[in-house]
Image 1 (tube, one colour):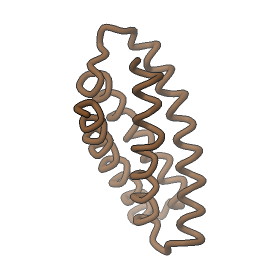
Image 2 (cartoon, one colour):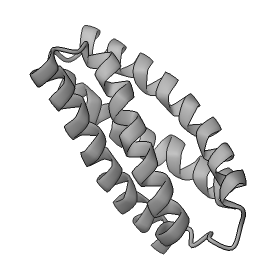
Image 3 (cartoon, one colour):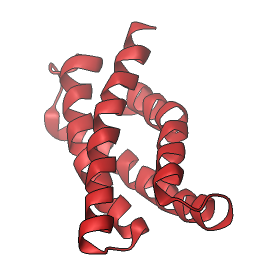
Length: 123
């Protein structure tokens, strides 16, 4: 349970950065919300990987390169799923891209990121 809670805390930090970047790009620079979300995902991924490696899974005794490649593979899947779900939820169910982004991030944090990071990336 401790690892799960730490993973969710790391995810929250990464999501805050991701969300802030996304909103900044949309509101200040007029970028399309879905593309801005991908850019936000990059920032969040860097933070999440770092916190996951050092604090959540305490996996510093293993190869950084190997973990980074595994994380990148998982992250690419996350970006595709996040991108598609964000568009679907925003365009068909919610009007506000920010609410849709938070909703998608919460669901994927528990169902996708944690499980794959624990069983594949930082194993």
